[in-house]
Amino acid sequence: LSADACITSTFVEGRCAIGIAPPGCWKSVFVNTDEGGVAWRDRTNGDWGPVLRDENGEALWRPTFKDGTYAEPYRLKPLGSLEVIDRETDTLVECGPNTCPKGEKIKHSNELPKDDRANRLVDSPHVGKWINRVPFYWSGGYGQGIRKSANSEVKDLMFEFFSYVNSPITSVDDIVMPSWLDDWRYSQLASYERNYQKGGWNYDSWNEHQRVMKYALSNDVNSALTLQLPGVLLYSRDVMLDQFQKYVSGESDMETVKEETIKGWNEATLVYGKINQLDSYRATLGLNELSTYQKCTLHRQEMDAIDPAICKEATDNSTTIIIVLCSLVGAGILALVLYFFYKRYKSFQAIKKAHEQLMESTLNEATRCLQQLDYPLHLIRADEFVNDKQLTQHEVMRNSHRLTVLDNIKDVDAFVLAGKHVVFFSHQWTAFNHPDPGNLQYNFMVSA
Image: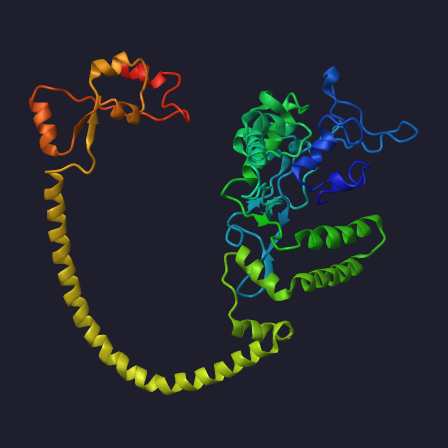
């Protein structure tokens, strides 16, 4: 149930056995909640808290395994389909290794890993069949921004906010606690002891969760993105969610839900403009906009509503273009035959000339590299380097005239023939205002 744990009480009242929602929603149900939830994760006494109970003290819902023990929340793999569309026949066909290359076979419980609690569940009636699972990437991410004209104090505040959100304590440790952050990075899923244990998760729940998350985030699965259009909440929340809740509560049947959803989506599309939405949606799929002619052919009514002259002009232009093209086809064929033989001769001459130029250029470059440097070589005396007690910025040494500069190969040869030695170190800046604030790299250089 999309975002059901956040919006309605359908799941926590025991009316559903499976929920589909952003991970952040489930944290309010299963992790450190003071009220509501199938099983409260109150770890103050080291044990699970009680399940929800009715006015008579009876558990509203207490799912159990086959052996009768309480079934703690279990992280399922993404749902999928046993059939897929055959693009050639436009029909549904059974999923298999060839039709679903990223699918998988539904396993019997005794085939699952020993640490997977699903091996205690009732086996699916579809054991042995192939399923095409599709992880749904619910959100494209959250973004924060600030206008360029804002004053410096506000900009500094926004920078501090970004730094806070991306700091290790926030982006890793806090994602298990009740917050608006969800775990989607490998670093956030890596350690049970670091945060999940403190957040009230038992080891089995964490292990199942991180295993499914890593599967869903891998490159070996299909994936589905959320609708990426202007007014997405109007389509999904205001239209679909309302109809879905009516269906769950028994206020509407499926056919009514379909009709009202189609009606609501058409009304939402009118608000933003069908052609604009079409262009935006194709862009999210990496496709180019349809041409004016295609839009007029497929969506003439909407195009005329924008400007009746657009499609009329496009139709007239298309007729003129067809006549002109037919007239040119005959002459074009003859010209192409002559042009083909001419191009073959010119191509041979061009290839021959290009080869000769490439050989000459390669030889010239090789000769140049034997006689000059691409960049000057800057050196500092070894005793001065040691006496500095730290890595000093290049600009500081340059301004204090402590660098020896060799501009070409001849200078380098003369320097070495004079009995002097050159030692080269490569290092990395580890701070914004100092190349090596802890002297870690510098000490290794001196000891070497």
